[in-house]
Length: 295
Image 1 (cartoon, rainbow, N blue to C red):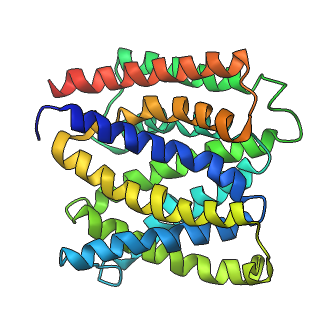
Image 2: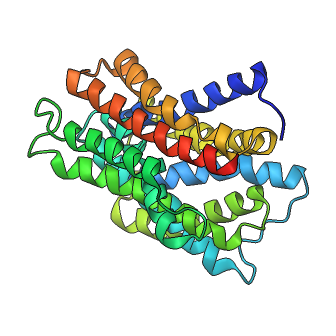
């Protein structure tokens, strides 16, 4: 690892923008496609750049090795379930709300890490950060202009999707000694395999005549936020470490709100801004505790 340079901060900002751009593109994709189809197309197109990179770097993809059950389980929990839940939820709520709800993953991972790892226990700073962050989410659910009885469940499903990411991350520790490109390629392959029968029986997307913007968005979702962004994440992790890379947590909801307003003219209320601030403060205190532990 090295001390971050200007190029490293530029790459971090690009990664944040890419992941933040996923939310308004999911919203556009829902104009023509169902949530299962969106999940399938994301993992299908996302697998292409990762598999090509593995082929170029001569990295063996072990999707069907003796550890196939781990890849299949992680593929379902870390890709299939959250991609479906987020797409289903975003159909009924603004994409900027999804960006804020999904930004809770560092807080959820801290809670799970306390119970399922040996060196990620709670302390006073972490507990304070978690309470502040989730207080912001609870406050967000009180915004009756954006969340009401018609889409309350959809917002909860997005929150559940963020939790699936965290559980998948914990499971990935079981195969942490394998190369990141191999793991990502393997779980994308298994996610595609799992979704093929589901999309075929539930939604039959070949019968859909999609809008052009929806088609562009769903292809973009697969290639850029799912495929290329993961590869960019690996580079940042390798060059600068996890703590530096984790700063995307602050930027994604901010960019998500900005992009939702620019491309979809989504409403930004005072409660949205207060909730965003509380979540960012909560993440800051959790990350501060992690930095102190490492130092």
